[in-house]
Figure 1: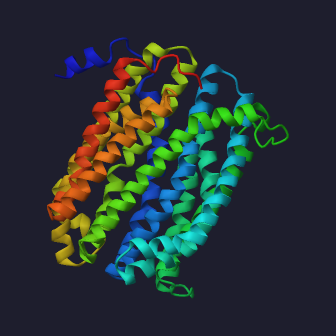
Figure 2 (figure 1 turned 60 degrees about the horizontal axis):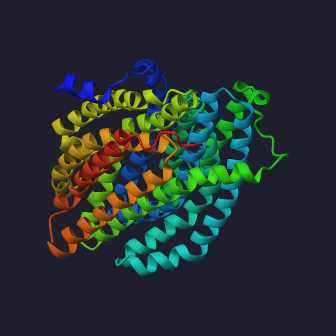
Figure 3 (figure 1 turned 90 degrees about the horizontal axis):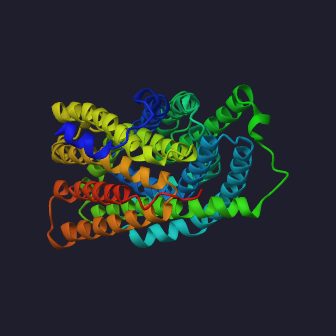
Length: 454
C-alpha cells in the first residue's frame, strides 16, 4: 500500500529533503507549542472561575479571532510572495513586499478595531442567548481588541521569516510571548503578586501585553540578526500601487478564506451554546485540546506554503507534488504520535482543565472524535496549503467555502433537527477533514495550477 501511494504521488521525486522540510517546520511547531501553552493556560485558569467564564472567554475569543483572520490571511499571502522572490534569488523586492504588507495591515487593524469597538457588543448581544455568557464575552472583548495592532505586526514579521525559511526566530519570540502571558494570566486573573483580580478581563489584558512583547522581540531580533540592506527592510520611501495590488490579488482570497473558516467555527460554538452551558464549557475545553493536536499540522502547513512557492520560483514545478507528498507523510506521523497519547489517557488530559466529573465524562467521546479528524487534517491541511502555495489562492478559497458550507449545514442539522449528542455534533470535524483532503488532492493532481504567477 505504501509503495503504491509513493508510485502515484511521488511520480517525479523532489530535491527537497525531509531534513529541509523539518528545518523549516520544527521552529514553527515549537513556536506553536509555546503559543498553545497560552491557549491551554487561559482555558485552564478560566476553567477555575467556572462555566460562565469558560464559555464567555471562548465566545469572546473566537469572535475576536474571526476578525483577526483577515490579517492572518494577508500575512500568508505575503509569505507566499516572499518565498517566490526568495526562490527566484531576488532579495531587494522582499523588503518592499514586507513594507507594503506592514502598511496595509496597520490600516486594516485600524478598520477592524473600529468595527469591533463600535459594533462588537451589539452583535454579541443579538446572537448569544445566555445573558451571563454574553456579558462575559463583551467584557473579554473590550480588552482583547487592543491587541490587534500588535498581532498584525507579528503577522508581517512571521511572513518575512517563514518566507525566507529562517523560522527559528518564531520559536524565540513565541517563547517570550508565552512567559509574559502565563505570568500575567496567573497574576491578573486571580490577583496574585499584588496585581488586581480582574477575572476574564485579566486574561484578555495578559494576551494583549504578550502580543506587545512578541512584537518587541521581533524588532530586536531583526535589527541584530538580519542584514537590513540586503532585503531593503523598513524602507517606506517608495510606495508601489502595482506591488500592493499584486499582494492583494494573492492575499484577498486568503483573507476571506481564513475569516470565513473562523467565523464558521464561531457560529459552530454559538450553535453549541443553544445546547446548554455545560456543552459550551466542555466544547471550549475540547477546542483547547484540539488546537494542541493540530500543532504539527500548522507547522507543516506553513512549511508547505513556503516550499511549494520556493520550488516554483526556482522553476521546478515538476517537484511540487512530490514535495507536498513528503510533507504530508512526516506531518501525519507527528499527528499520530500525539493522538495516540490522547487515546490512552483521555480522562487525565481533560482533567487538566476541570475537576468536574460530569464535564470530563462528557468530553471523553469528543476527544476520540477529534483524534480521528486530526489524522485526516494531517493530509487535508497539507494538500490544501499546497494549493495556496502554488499561487492559486482563489481556488483554495472556493475549496474552503464548499467545505465550510457542508460543515455548517451538517452542524445545524445535528443540533437543531436531530438533537444529537455533543460528541455526535463534533463529528462534523471528520467530515470537514475528508472533504478538504479529497478536493485539494484532486485539484493538485489535475495540475491546473501550473503556470500561476505571483
